[in-house]
Length: 116
Image 1 (cartoon, rainbow, N blue to C red):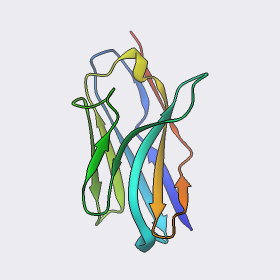
Image 2 (image 1 turned 90 degrees about the horizontal axis):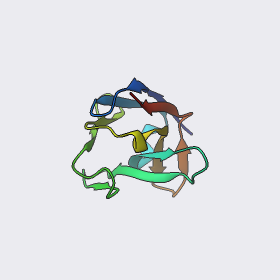
Image 3 (image 1 turned 135 degrees about the vertical axis):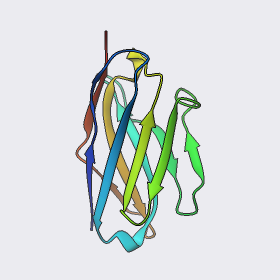
Image 4 (image 1 turned 30 degrees about the vertical axis):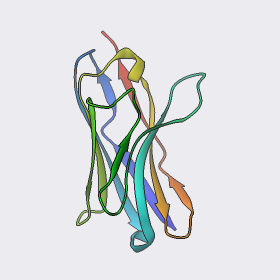
């Protein structure tokens, strides 16, 4: 089992920045890839960014160039640095971990609201 705990959400004005953190615990040795997904009201959950165990990163087109995903293996933590935030980035952001057995784990989610 892998437990994920997110932090760092909040309310920010358009153009502002936030950094989300996700701390993993439990069977961390089995984790391959980690990532961030988001779900806005009335919409399906969508991929934001992922980072593989080898460091390869992947971003949704809508956040490319504005968001940066990173991973601290010593702290078992993945981060999402979000810059130039837009109102359409408003959503609940979920941390995800995929282990080597193909099992997905999710955090409880953290709210990000971009509003003036």
